[in-house]
Image 1 (cartoon, rainbow over the protein chains, first blue to last red):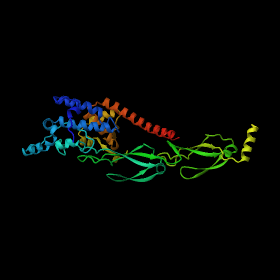
Image 2 (image 1 turned 180 degrees about the vertical axis):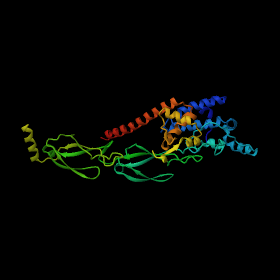
Image 3 (image 1 turned 45 degrees about the horizontal axis):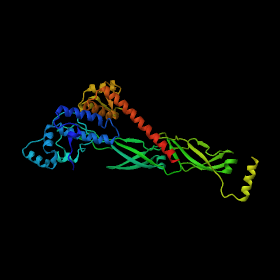
Image 4 (image 1 turned 135 degrees about the vertical axis):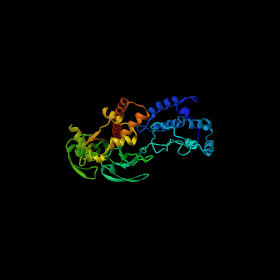
Length: 296
Length: 98
């Protein structure tokens, strides 16, 4: 466990006055506060460090102890015992609406060693909402296609309904399933981000699907009927126009991906025809092609 | 809005130990909608998280209401841009796979 230089954290000299500590804390807190840096874990960690430094340096008793024993944190416990024997107790320094992202478990091991589990924190704590939890749910594209139930394990098992059409990277909020509140405060929320993998022959862009269809030369030239697979496992018969060019795109309306939370509505399916030239031609076939070539 | 989805301002301010005027100011800036039913004023329960965030900005970070208004606007823009990034990233993935 390493010594933490709280003065360095708040970018202050050791001679800093209470007013300077308060000013430095406010300045850095505004910069790194999680409310102003949503979804930024680096800012959250930095803010916790700033908060911890302020917790120590803004409390005269803690600051005195830190200045005396800071580098020899192992002696902190001995100090604490001696202090308790003298019947002294840490008193509330009163004051501000002290932000904490969770139920007070965000201090470093160093802090806990020096000041104990609760850190001798202020007596009358206001109620705090529990910490919001971020989690990821891995889905396949097939799973994202249909509304279904999933069971998540975040501390406890939660059964959720995943609506069809959810997008890769999309985050939903599940209220009240985050960390427990402190001092009787409400629980935080669970923010669930969907990570969707795709090993199908279809590519997704929003609600639309894209796929390539291989056409043999003769169907492309003369036209004809083909049957293609749709994403839901169905089959669709299509008429290919004569003289269809390579890379021709065809739209199948309503055969794409379900639109999120819009029952019965779907995006479109785009087909790209890839014309495949014949190989291993027989002598007769070669002659026929030559004949065709000579007619041009 | 059903009454079960609301919390009275009196109850809210007592619980959080804040002045009524703070919520009034949020309303003036368009950051909060206060609902009046039979002369009792309420805030929607679903807005509590937002109000808590405004409280932290105001009471802990000493940001005034003008600042909170500007920050809220920028955060909304940021959320919208993040959503756009997700959509564009997914679209880019499709082209990279080709």
